[in-house]
Length: 132
Image (tube, rainbow, N blue to C red; front, side, top):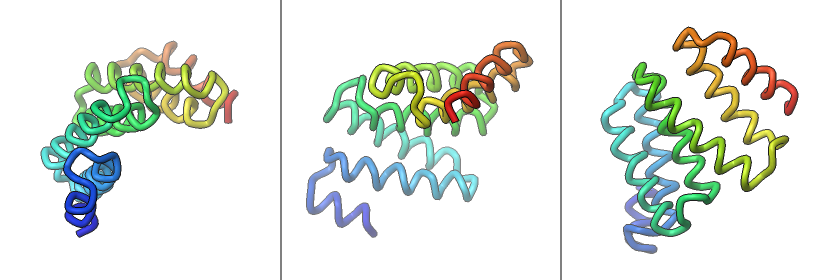
């Protein structure tokens, strides 16, 4: 319902619409409707890229959301790439010691762990812990 209101009020390409799409996608993930979630996360990413460009924190959030979805789908190479992109954006925007950077480090470490890259996973987990 909020999505339709925002689409009507702001238009289909407004950042508020992207936020509603991402929120709806999160609900779909919880219900294990992963195809629907992916479609909505991709729409949110496209809207945020159009409005803010590739280095904005909202784009990093979209990439992180997609990375989490890819990890859940066991598409670890895709998840790794998405988390790395989100991490770079957040580090550039927030610095290396921000909690939002630590969150992505933790997510990226989880992917490395799934890939049996335990040394890299440990390194990333330690970085995240140092920030927290």
